[in-house]
Length: 254
Image (cartoon, rainbow, N blue to C red; front, top):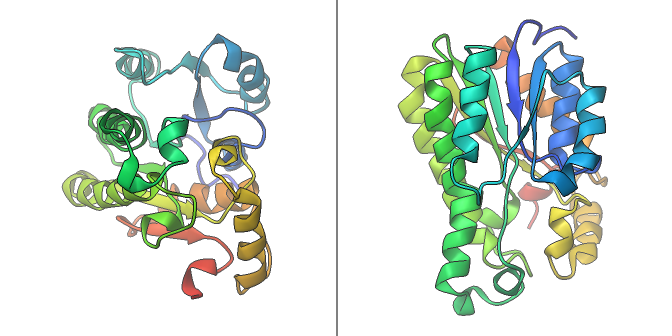
């Protein structure tokens, strides 16, 4: 239970207590890690700050990826306070609603670029900023979904975006591996999160996953958190470049 004792990590993407990032934060802390947590803006802070206190977060920092310089400011603060970092969780995704709910064929250029910037490029940028803070190695995580690999009804433009994110994960793993930095994409099954609320027909996705997954059960944020936290431990030191499915086996079923 103390496999991450003495480790320090950055957790982004907590919106409320239903967030996947919150499940991960709880698991990281339960294994002994010290955390820095981000919140989107002042409106979100009132929901995130009580959660940050629950995991004894040493740092609570604003992070709006649409605001120039905020991402860099987060890493500058971590460098000043801690000097080093052991793991980073990127659990941020966004697409304009009109583009997300429409056909990929019809998506706007700006909508596509925005989704790629927030959901994919920001992870690459985080890796760039984290690298000098991980002289002894570390682990980087992002959040994906099965729609990156197969066409999922109503997932629409986020499918190509998540496919790019998983590809970026593999390239980052190859480039950063010699420095002892491991990189993984986590691919949970359907979960009732705020981000999922923007997907049309999401309830049907939940029912389908529960009916077809070999385990016949939906996953929850704690399932995702515990598996992700394990990957940050030394027990997983020889694993990198993975897309880890935490979905009750749904991804193996036609």
